[in-house]
Image 1 (tube, rainbow, N blue to C red):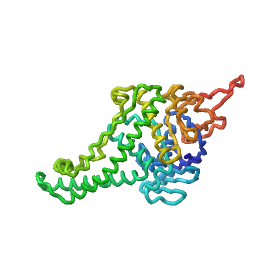
Image 2: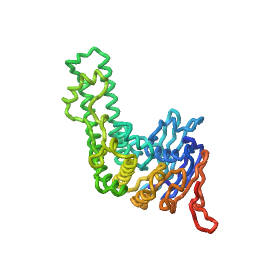
Image 3: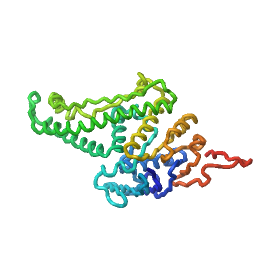
Image 4: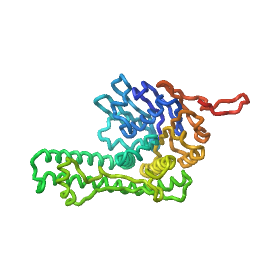
Length: 381
């Protein structure tokens, strides 16, 4: 799949732009805080219906009342137009100008895999960031997961609200016999099991592919990458009943997939506590390369790869390894502050855009300049 044309109205710092993208590699160059990442965020928002780092209202350009992100795209050789319109109190998603009624019908049409500096939060922000990583990956890969996770969150809220209500009454906590709580719990367990099974199978597949990608990318063939999935999910009703007293006192559900966690290991070394920043970067890139393969296998089409200032942190050797591991038909969108940081392998046949003060211009010379001897050199911006 690929985006052929991207249009933004009142998105972040962009008032009205339209870009024709290359089906191969696109590079956006500009100084920090000029809006390079906003381009990637707009594509991610179009794919997942929401940003990975901000609320809908925060995406609207300051002083404006709405935003629109749209793209003419190709999926499995079929052309389509996707649009998201967001105002302060409404969101409308369109496919070929027809409104989308269910989110599960939309998510997965446009698949993206994003690598950004924010990915390092997976090592800092605890289980919540890891669950977010699993959820976004599974939503893009399997339509059923979109429905399951939405239903899971609704049932979790219903159960928590009822627990809080019971806590506000004079309930005999040593002799709890509540039919409604039992019913909510049984329904919660049923949906919880679906999430647990999908996450467990996904992590198993992710671990296998990530280990291979890590070896290829880092050159380290001596360590197997392990991804441990920790869940306190239990489908035994008695386990929940034993926790009724504790849950009513806390007003929250203590058993379930909303407590899941992941741990990453290189051999016996915990990435969070024992590995360097460079090793963590290799792991994150390997996870994203694995996601590309998983999505491609599920969707029978390549996702779009978004790389936010990645090449500035990689030496030329690792840049070349990364590029060599990508399918030649994948569309890649890269941001950078300077072309000098990007090797010639990435620059060859790339479409280059310059960002400045909310405007974007295409470099018709494709980044090349000639020196006084007529030899082609890369322009240093």
